[in-house]
Each structure stands twice: as structure tokens, then as C-alpha cells.
Image (cartoon, rainbow, N blue to C red; front, side, top):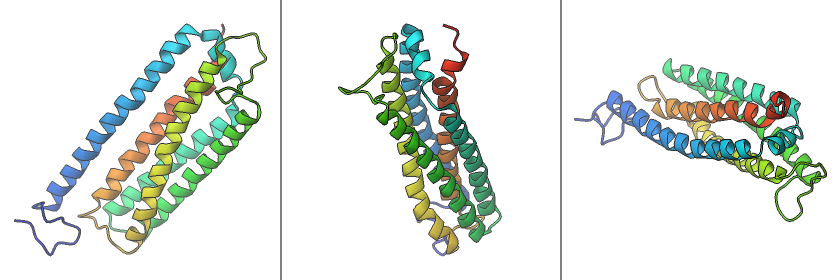
Length: 217
């Protein structure tokens, strides 16, 4: 029977171990649906890129590789700080959980800020898909590339915004000592989510930004 006096143990679980296993299982199921979701988008990318290789290479060359590269480094750094937050939770250093997660949030905000700059440049240049899309090159169907670019990076950014919102809830709880070595499944579960979002970008960066560099068409 569950120990009702155990801090952080929900009444419908018999032990911390059972609660953690259920939490991780639920998170992995959720991430599996996210893999299917983004996997479908990557399939759309592959189909249209195969059908329009010249247009996709031309559109890719319009992206800022430097900003994309900086954002890649920023997200890799945020994965490190998130891993350190999880480690702090495992060893019971609750204030370090809050500090590392705050740094993760700062890096996430930096990523979104750089992405906003990129978006503003593309919109100013007339590369936002729609009735006012502008393309002066000889290639056709370049708008399709930017459709996919804004859709995939926009959905990725939305996942980051959601993650940062969750962090705003977890950080003060961690600072107050809500998480212990026995009960920190929220931190580890969120860590899995954040690492997944980072991995998605690791795939997006070469497919979108490096296509124009590596393509010989």
C-alpha cells in the first residue's frame, strides 16, 4: 500500500519506483507519437526535395548558415545544461536543479531570439510563403521549400516555447525542494522531452541549411 506520508508520491502508486516507471513509460509513449509526427514531416520534405532538387538547393542557399550554426551550438549547450539538471535531481541538489534549468531556459530563449531574427529577414526579403512571396531567380517551386522551412522550424520552435513554459513551472518547484532523489521523475521526464526537441533540430539543420552547400545540381 502506498505510503501517504512519502513526499512527492501520488496516492495511486505503491512506491517511488512504480511512479517513476509509469512516468517514464508515459513520456516514451508521448515521444513515440512525436516521432511519428515529425517523421511525417520529414517524409514530406523528402518527397518534395526529390521532385524539386534545384528549387530546394536554391532556397537553402538563401538561409543564413552562420545563424543556423550558432543555434545548433546553443541547443547542444542546452542539452548539456538539461543533463546537468537531471543529474542534480538524482543527487538531491534542488537549487542546482533550478540553476541548470534556468540556464537551459536562457539558451532556449537565445535560440528563439535568433530564430526570430532569421524569420524577420526572410519576411523582409519576401520569402514568406503566400500571395506576397517574391523570388527573382530562374528556379521554379522555390516557394515550396520555404513552405516546408517555415512549417518545420515553426513547429520545432512551438515545441521549444511549450518546453520553456513547463520550465517556468518546474524551476520554482525545484528551488523550493519539491524534487528529491526518490521523487524527481518530472525532471527526468522533461529532460527526455527537451533532448528530443534538440535532436529534431540536429536533423533540421543539415537538411534545410546545408542542402544548398552540399548540392551539386
